[in-house]
Image (cartoon, rainbow, N blue to C red; front, side, top):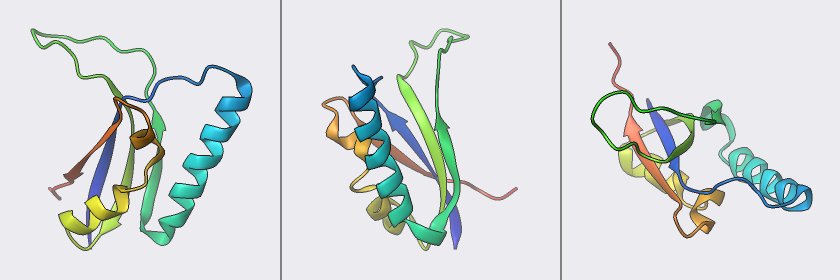
Length: 98
């Protein structure tokens, strides 16, 4: 198995406490469904600042998982709650051991 990083883009803050609770339940249900493959649940990102000439990326959080391959990791990202947002996406990266 190798480590893979899910980098979440889009989503945004919930508009109400009730919406926030529903969103948290969706995230916990999805992450819980990944079982033992979850190495680090991760965290959402807060405020950011870009240093350099890039325009920024709109990243919203990350998780780290174990998977057999990049395709397996991408399949595990399917169903992520961020994908319900019109601007939501999950970028999947293999973490190369150094």
